Amino acid sequence: MKNLTRRDFNGLMMKGAGSAALMSVTSFACAMGPNQDKKKLGIALVGLGSYSTYQLAPALQDTQHCYLAGIVTGTPDKEKIWADKYNIPKANIYNYQNFDDIAKNDSIDAVYVVLPNSMHADFCIRAAKAGKHVICEKPMAVSVEECDAIINACKAAGVKLGMGYRLHSEPYTQQVKQFVKEKTFGDIKFISAEAAYRSTGNPDQWRLNKKLSGGGALMNMGVYAVQSTIYGTGENPISVSAQEFSTRPEYFKDTDETIMAQLEFPSGAVANISTSHNFNANSMYVSGTNGWVQLQPANNYGPLSGKTSNGDILEFPHESQQKLQMDDFAKHVLLGEPNKAPGEMGKRDMMIVEAIYESIAKGGQKVNLNFAPGFGFGG
Image (cartoon, one colour):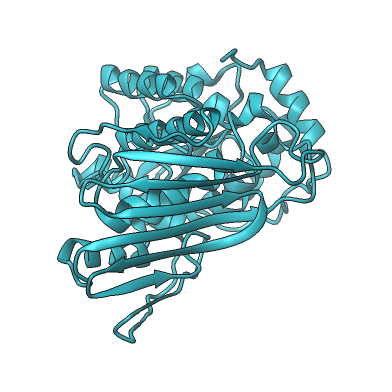
């Protein structure tokens, strides 16, 4: 895929998000300063869209093992807003042109790439070459080839690579994994997973532009549904069949609107997934020989909710998933704890996404998958 220039990107973003309100400039005390405890990981956010603005940056004010050290933005007006709000030194503010200079900045240990999907590979690779650890927002890239390039660049540079898979640090998801591992409900036979929302506001947003997104609902929400089937079985799929539906082609001109897929697993378990930008759905249901567990909602920012066939209502204190996720990555880097969402997990999911698109292109034909045992599973 052709690399986008800054002019291409900014033009598309202005078209798709020109009416978005700028974040508040209200200042508050933050955990950033020249005497910052270096036992914490200094993170720079690359891309200051809504996810960085309303989720990641606030979460970094509460993290225990990392902090907001810097920003990278293609919008000059945001530099002062963020600098004032989070007390970020000018030396820790970069744009897309001088990003590589971050290699000289010892106060920034890692970068979190939160750009449109087609820009992930470029900035992850540049960050690795600059000697910075990398968190890559999902999906990892727009192709398996790009995933390999990111993984290889991080290995060559000797830096850590993690995926922005917040649910792997979230207690309800962890509980489902534990149920599956301990066979609380026997052998898993069936999974249903739904991840969808209805998009109505802006047909020119970058998520609906294939040049920027690489795909539609599947690349966005579908990754959550795919992941649900994997931790709901404890296995990687061995085959997939898929179908695509379009009911609003005038709105979804360039990307997939609704996709449904059926997955098979080595144990004999089967799964149905659905993902869409045209309806709301947010659940997972895991059925075993001795009972079931359900999360609904299952994949939003929380609080989540769950119940089981035993009559138990799953209840955990709600914390920012992004806070938990970034602290887990920091503990992986600083303390050697397991990587809960390694780059190989992102690659595996992209392999499944590509297989789903291949099945659709072949009229729903089954596409076989061949993963090494445990490939892509985090710690």
